[in-house]
Image (cartoon, rainbow, N blue to C red; front, side):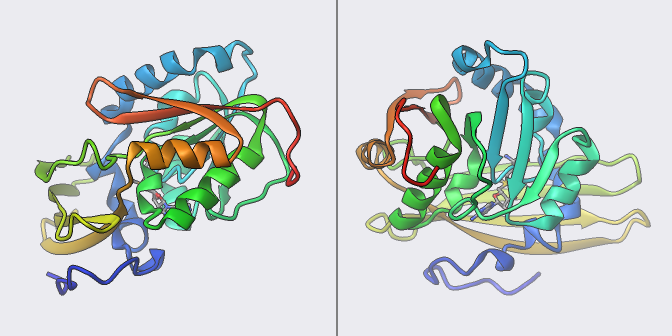
Length: 260
Ligand SMILES: C[S@@+](CC[C@H](N)C(=O)[O-])C[C@H]1O[C@@H](n2cnc3c(N)ncnc32)[C@H](O)[C@@H]1O
């Protein structure tokens, strides 16, 4: 098992997250598209107003392995972006018809507008207010006037609960993965919580190795979120999804923005 990091090192930088870099090839056995069907259906229902055109475009920031996108692509023409090339490589295998681009959600500028901009669970990696604000600015800049932005943090301060989860799958190639996910908050007074993953990785030849991967994730209150949407020129509201998660949906005002 790799070394356990001290609880309060702050954001270590994205390349330190092994799951999205050297372990990215295991993503389909940890969180495959089959687990995202209900969530995608719920999201499409919420965004229905923005999907009236069969050619509606959607930009996803932090699309990862494309498991959610796999279901959304039936409803949108999708551009999938992520900081990690290894995750985009995974997404390309299941979403070859989608455009894939490497980019940081805090600073990406494509010079294009989309009908919908989506930031799913990747927003958890914005661990400071400035990072959330920069991501919302990116989203607003790429959203057409009157377009829609949806942001789905795993937790906001009001919904956070320490917990554990487990799962994993077997691949057709003989590989297998099982994981324990331990979500906890060593300091409820600060803006982050931790997700520690214990990963059991079985290679095709039956060899099993164990890896530990720590993720530092951001935790902010509902009013902070809504204030940041307003600052970015998005009139937003929030709702609870069937899994108790907060979903923020905003509409970009009709006027042009300086950055466009
Ligand atoms: C949990 S995964 C996303 C999985 C995705 N929802 C799916 O359906 O497969 C989180 C992703 O956020 C990405 N990420 C983290 N920080 C980012 C940033 N600053 N800009 C873009 N992507 C980022 C990671 O590389 C990772 O692929």
